[in-house]
Length: 102
Picture 1 (cartoon, rainbow, N blue to C red):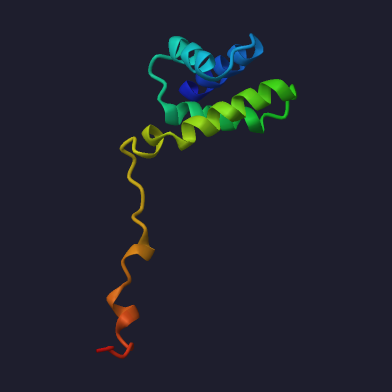
Picture 2 (picture 1 turned 90 degrees about the horizontal axis):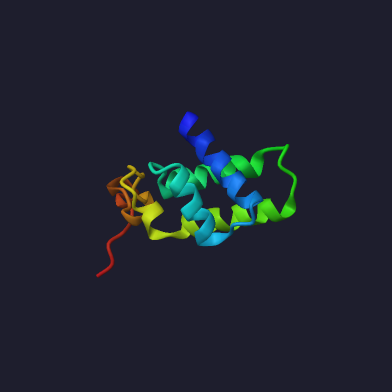
């Protein structure tokens, strides 16, 4: 949690200084070199849920950064074990009572 809080603080500080997009991302990476895109996205969501943070411009900048990096392939393929899509392979029991078509 401590790492996420430091990333959160860097995000808010950078956004308050007027940084956006890649400049904000670079600012966060400079202050928190171990921060991954995934950690930055999670810290962004923490910032968006903070009731004390009310400046619309800052929230918009943080939101845009979170969306951009969430959709980035690097975040989706960062080595986390995700559950495979169960719909892709039907279970054998689902086809047990189905008549075979020739």
